Image 1 (cartoon, rainbow, N blue to C red):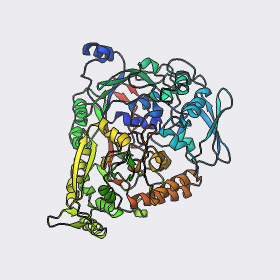
Image 2: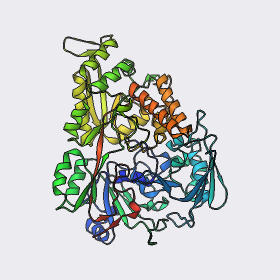
Image 3: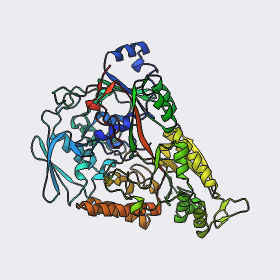
Image 4: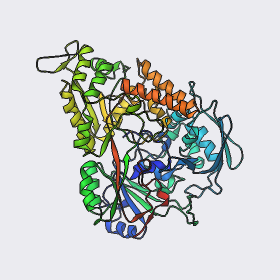
Length: 595
């Protein structure tokens, strides 16, 4: 799905191991399977999987969850997957000025890129000034670097060969954590940034696509790209120039190779894990009891970490705009979707507890907020957050009060007599999400709404949500926004790249005429800006709690269920430190294979 909340750090590596696939496909680059297995057996390796192919190997233009970046890149800082604390990465230390508007980072000595070239302050300057802060390059990274009402950006300056200075025009509380975004290689990418294509855009926008030879993609993380075969696998090899070392001085990472199989079905991933060909699998509820019985005799451990940081939600397309003279959404349906009582009625009609009991087999929790329960800024229902408990009567009352009516067959009609019917899409192959969509269809039928539920292919889904904007409602989720609310700024800022429910066109797309921003939508935008400006933690908490109240009142997203974080990992993988925050592989560079 779309890259949602992918602020980079080792912490995000946990998503790389959730769904795993088989290694029984044709060997890479035309080798036979026996040759591949023989070679693989000689080196420590881990086999995981991904639900879809990568769309690019260029972090700045990426908009989906992509395994590659978690293995291949680091920023100046990272996040501890157990404590959530900020820790050094490429920068060994930093100093923050008394007015909180200047951070000076000191890079580690002797840093190198995966091709052996030095990684220097000049790369940091290039990454920020020529890519992330360059308005000619559309990147979601810029959303989390914007500061204040004006959306001003920081200035980045080289002090000497190891020190770089960041200055913000005003205090910006989440700025240190946001410097976890990857540093990219100037020597490999500067020419593409400075050269224009025939349309006048930087060639960088099409650089490092999936057809790029692996040896041309330069990394600084624990792994480098070793190979990619479409719809088959991505292979990562150990980066021999990675800076990390164990306390005993051993070079990291210890695992030589990671193989990520491309599998579009979680059922297939589970089958392959049970057959012994995979090293880890995120456990969906329907398989938990089965795997629990096999845990001891099959030499794997099931790790449980409480509710995940992921979200699941239903959202409607609230965009009132037109493109090329044609409304993005049927005006009749757009009026329904933009009626607050309609969205609230839908929220009351969905039976989350039945969803948890039947679909999640009890291995889930109701999701009340856009923030995870682990965040110190989370507002609980006990502290005043609105809760939409299952209440069909309340849903019907809201609809009738908003001018809707029922015919003799119990079908819901609007005030003009139009049958209330809309299409709901999600990504095909995710069995749990497909089951959730089927239940939503059944739940809404009880208040007279007909839902045409249609799981579709991943690429088609992405095109609808980010390109054509031709959709009515979708059932999806955001992957791990983290503890810091500003990590999701690109969702809540009205011009943010992931403001999915009322999206602006992306760079290079046809304009949208007549897009409107609601007062509540703007207010949430303003609160996120204020929260980033406020340095007092108690005041920040109050600001983000007010934003949560507005989000729950106006329901741009109707949140559903947070699954429990459960992953099975082969006992041969040593060093797992598991939590819902970090998952299984957040410290991938420290893990070892013990045969």
